[in-house]
Each structure stands twice: as C-alpha cells, then as structure tokens.
Length: 621
Image 1: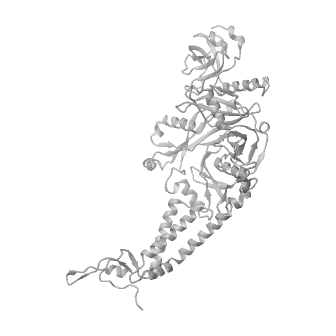
Image 2: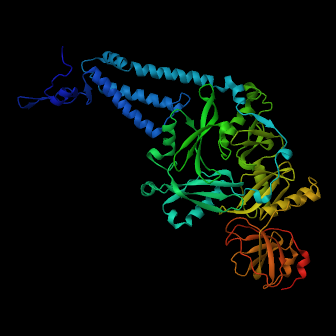
Image 3: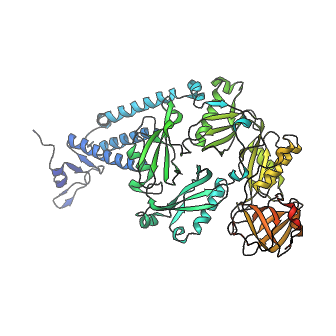
C-alpha cells in the first residue's frame, strides 16, 4: 500500500509531515534550473488530514467570529445566515488552498472542488431556501391582516381617563437638557471626571414616585478601563425631571457588567453566552426601588413568518453589579421595570395597524381610515408606569392630528384618544411665535390634561441649550398659546386664556393649590427690570446668594418694598443655576430670623404669582 507521504528532495520536511510547498525546483550539476511556476500554498496529501485541517481552521474562524460578533443561534435571526455562509466560505476556501491541482485540467479541478465542497454547498442552498420561504411567509402583501393585529388599540376618552397632574410634577427636561445637566454634574466631581464619562442613553423611569432620567457611567478610554476595571463603574446618575437636580449615586460595589466593559464582562457577550438562542433589543438602564442598577434586556421574537412581526416576549434583567440575570415573560416582569417595549417598536406596530386594518389594497387604493403616527414621541407618568405619547394623523394630510396614543412601555397596553387638533410641529411653531424675538426653540411637546383640556406642554430653550421659558398650547384650538418664566406662571396664564375663550369656567382658571417652600429674612438688595411689558422685582435676602423674582402685576406689594424690610417669600424651584421664582411675597414681623435658602444656584425662573397675605401690607420693618 502506497504511503500518502511521499518524499520530495526539494521539500523534505513537508514530505515528512504531509505538506508540500509549491515553489522553485532544486539544483542540478551546480547549475540553477527554473521549475514551472506553481501557486504557493500548503498542500495536504492525505484526504483525512486535509478534511481535519479544513475543519480546524473553519472552527477557529467560527469561534473568533462568534466571540466578536455574537450572532444569535436562531433561525429568525438574519445574523445566523451570515454566520453560516461565512463558515461555508471559509471551509471551501481552505479545501481549495490545501488541495493539489497539479496535473488537472479545468474540468478536473472543477470536479474536485465540487466533490470537496458538496456539503457546504447543499447547506448554503438549504438555508437560502429556508430564508426565501420564510421571507415570503412574512411578506406584508400576504400577511397584512397579521401585521394589523400586532398591536391591540383601545379607544378611550381623554378627559376621563387621563388625570390632571400638578405643575410641580410635570417633567420639564428633554433628553438633551438631561445630558447637559448630567455632564455638568460629573464635571464637578474631580475624582471621576478624569476617569469616566456618561453614557448618552438616558432612560426615563418612575423612581419613588418621581419622573427621573437615569444613566450609567462609562470608562473614558481603554487605558482608563485597564486602570479602573477591578473596581467597576463606581456610580450612576439620576436627573430629577421636575426639580432638574442632578445626583451622582455612588455605589459601595461598582458595576462590572455594562456595555462599556470588554471581554467576558461586556453586557452583550454576557447575555449571548447565557442565552445563545435569544434575540435582544438594545438594553436599557434602570434602577429598582432600592436603587440597585439593572439592565433591562427585552427579548425580541418574530411572530409573522420567519422574519416579520417583530415583538417582545419577555425580558432578561441583569444585575449591573453582580451579573446575575433572570428571564421573565412579559406578564411577569416586575412592576418597578418601566421600559420593556421601545417607543420605536410601538410606533412601528401602530403604523402597521393604521395602514392595514382595512386590508393591503386599501392601504394603496382609496386609503379609507389609513392613519400613521407623527414624527416624534414623549413620555408621561401615569400611576407608577411610564407611557409613551405620540400623535396620530391621516396619511393623506399631516397638517392636523386626528388623535393620539398613550402606550404603557412595560405592558404595551395602548389607548387611542380621538381628539382632532394641531400636530406637535404646529404646536411647537405656535409656541415659538410667541417669543420669536427671543429665538427660543421648543422641545417636542408633552401631552397633559389641564382642566380637562388636552394640552401640549413644552420647554423653550435658548441658543445655549438651557430652558428659558415654558409654553402651553391647546391641542384643539392651537391659537390658544401661553408662556411663562416658570411652569406655575405658564399654567396660570394658560388657564386664564381657557376661561377667556369659554373653554372652562372662571372658577377653574385658578391653579390647584400646591405646597411651596418659603424663605424668610431681611431684604439686602432689590433690582428691577421690565420684560414683555411687565415689571419684575429681583429680591435678595441677607446671607443668601440667590435672587427671588416677583411680578409687580401679581404682587403689588413688591413696589413698596425697601432694603432692610423683613419679608417672607413663597417660591417655586425651577431650573438649576438660575434665579428662584417667587410666587408671592409678604412683609414679615420684625425680628424674624432668616430661613435657609433652598440652595445656592437652585433652579428657577421669573414667576407671576399670587399675593397670599394682602392684609399684611401695613406691617413695617
């Protein structure tokens, strides 16, 4: 029996180990003789050894690719098909590379390749057939009815279902403003700012009854990861969307499982190794009621054919500190979790509902009752859940909304409120026109119930990106627009406008009572300014750095105040770093000790308030 290993005097070591190096021939009689040019490749003579080498290289490539790209081992994941195609391509390439074609014509070489790559070829062909059939079964033309049923929409009444919230509970920050506050807060911490940065993906949640945005820290760069990875990320940020205060929450034990990690502690790799067949949406950062940081990783499934009908079937909660993970079906997700369904997914499912509820042909011809969501969304807290808000408009016109959606981001319970009115873009334009001389830019509106009137609420930001004023626009009659230096002033002006236009009774024009902090002390400084035709007084108390703003139109007592007068100021906190907004001022009795201020540089704006004790105007210093 002939040995598969043949001795080649020009390649003795290759002969011994079963490999042959293509190249120049040997020497004869001391004279160099040039051999025919051959491709330089490793040739494995033994068929068994050749297959083993090909499989080994393919396996090494597959493991490296899986570790780096983390494809889900799921036939509903398109990444799996790419992964298998690459494996087959690598195997076929190695089969050609390790084979000896010398002495074969083109037909013989083709026959050899066909024999060596038959299994990968049939595997690729089979997967292509599966993908083709799966795509056909997912085609919207054939499955329009199934796409329309992805989202169950309940019609409801806005005034009766959505409760009014007090203005001191209205979230006033958009994502951009939250990022600015977070970056400013981190910059104040000398021990962190040089080593860490902030993940830009802030998540809006309800935390201990307050709407907040939370996010994790990240390592500044790979070098800082090496020097800090042993302790993990030491803190996360919480931005209160009402008081606009930023807090860095330090952890006794750092977070070691985040997207900012590398190797085995990287969140995506940690998930893939534990759940190799699951597909996941982008993880979101949340904290539970005790402040423990978690990553909420929603499990994605395809419900129509093989690739269509994207939905969520559950979520994996990963403890960011320990890496411990638990899978929950949607119905069993803990109530403290606020974000399971992404806003984009809910909007996509509603667009299918609005497009195909009367069939595929109707979506093209006739377009009866065909609707779609508007461009953009915002969030509103109802009870202990976060709801996504977006408008709904007809596909034939985007000049007005026919209603809007509220969808629970934990359960996907979705309500449609048929309220015809302005689009969000129109409301933003109306608000900006009220202060066009200031060139403020309106944020995407938040939908509120003010005196049973659907109302767009938005912040007005200056060129520096900071909130300067607030605006409210009536959804149904968007020519009713009011602004204010604070939310309290804005709501007061808006309710008055509603009453003047006959939409509410005069008794409803008063803002519901809320508790305000007070500051008592002796006036150390008084300044005045005229803004929008109204006189404002800026008051500073002895021993304080902040100013309180009082509208003379709403508080006539401000006109007769003098430096040295003891006063009590009731104020409303607002944006961090600006002047506090006084809602009322009254003279205090002589000898009253000053109260501590709410905090130097706390948030605020100028406010129109109401005089609480007109009868005390006679009091003297």
